[in-house]
Amino acid sequence: MTRFVNVLGWIGTALVVAAVAIRFIRPEQQQVWQRLALAGLVVVLLYLATQWREFATMWSRRGTRAGALTSASVLLLLAILVGVNYVAGRQHKRWDLTEGGQFTLSDQTRKVLGELKAPVNVKVFAKDTEFQRFRDRLDSYTYASPQVKVEYIDPDKQPAVARQWQVQQYGTIAVDVDGRIERITADTEQDITNAIVKAVEGGEKKVYFTQGHGERDTTSADQRSGYNAIAGALQRDNFAVDKVVLAQQQDVPADAAVLVIAGPKNDFLPPELDMVQRYLDKGGKLLLLIDPPDGADAAPLTGLITLARAWGVDVGTNVVVDVSSVGQMLGAGPSMPVVATYPDHPITENFALITAFPLARSITPVDGGTNGRTAQPIATTSAQSWAETDLAAVFAGTPVARDEGGADTEGPITLAVAVGVDAPGAPKTPPPPPPVPGQPAAPETPPTPQTRVVVIGDSDFAANGVLGTQGNRDFFLNALNWAAQQENLIAIRPKQAGDRRVTMTEDQQRRVLYLSVLGLPLAVAALGFWTWSRRRG
Image (tube, rainbow, N blue to C red; front, side, top):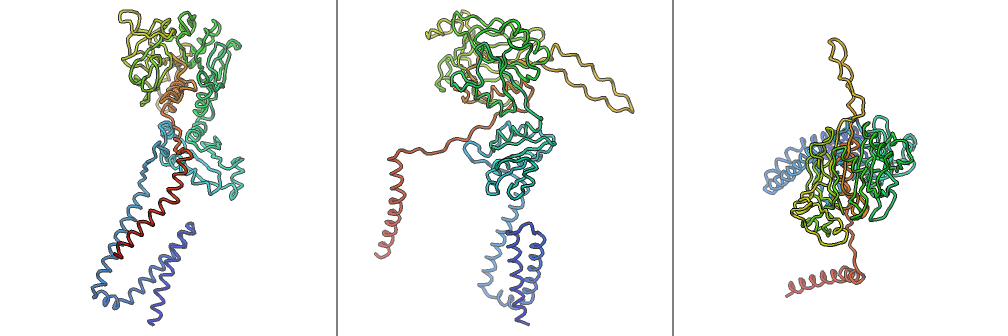
């Protein structure tokens, strides 16, 4: 009998060990390992019940009581750890300790996820050895929104599923929203968020940049004048970018979500101005970036200036000079005003980044507005700036000072304004009829189309060379997204991860090699010899 009881204890222990092994090796066999664990626990308890006399004898010994106290302390610590793990598994909290917030979603992404109305199903098609790379990014999305569900699929193990989702290569992420599917082969935050926006909205919006008057080129990589970097940023914000020569058109393209006039050197022709005006009257959206004159004798862009004034915007004939210390810290001269003050507006909501505008002119609201159209300032310079009207001195490189009693305007100076009004040419929507008892409510009346115009007194700030300056890129994209009535994309976008590589000269590399291969081992050996000699002495 005693022999059987002893074997019973080993059987119970074996059952518990087998349950733990199955739990980690085959976690999907939940019923199996749970039943084994329960059976093992019952057998062990039976064994302990038959050995109560031996336990009573052992407890009478002093060493046994001390060991029992130690064991109880260990079990209490384990219980605390299990309890903390249980609570942590149900109350999620994450901390990102990386320098650039590598695992923290940007304001823009959190805003997009916070406005999701339908479930977003994300399927990652990659080799199972690559899953962790995607989890590092996508876990932040599932943590930020319960609407986002992520599934990881190995195309080699589930080829039928990969074929159904039309997956052509490893590393494909498919985003499904109500049957609208977007596929990407990159795992950056900007690409994933853009895919979600496309799937939610069902396509891209078209942005047209005018050409034919010396405007910026969205395909040029030139550092001083090219706009290909901002064109790429627009594409990541769910816009399709194209060019248009209005002189070759009968009208502004009907699919234009926003028309951008970026830095024209020559004025628009009257028929072109009429096209833009008709477009705006019907609820069009315009982003006008108008630089100062190229010289003291340069012909003014009268047509565009008149168009801006018709929408309550006054374009100054000046160059804004800024002698503030902020501009000097950026290594900028006085002709590059730096903006750190943004009046309240959706474009600059929670915007706390500085922006730099190389060679800008003042853009101010017309006092009292124009035909009921009142512009709102969205960017102003410091009090140490002014609008310099002596263009000859500026372009000659002569140091300038503010003319206290002359035509120069004392700072702060407004560099950008925005106008949003009901489209004057849109048909008036009649008010909905009053509700009738017992009948279903009438469908909601669609809102009246809005015309939105943003005017900025500089186009250089979005050129390739200075686009990376603090908030330049976000300011441009926020202004365009507001004009396109995509307020959900107005936010601070994700920044690129910093390059943390250490670059060393050949001599420095040699010193590190000697230190690691010879220096450290010799130091350890010397310390050991010193310790040995002290003990012998």
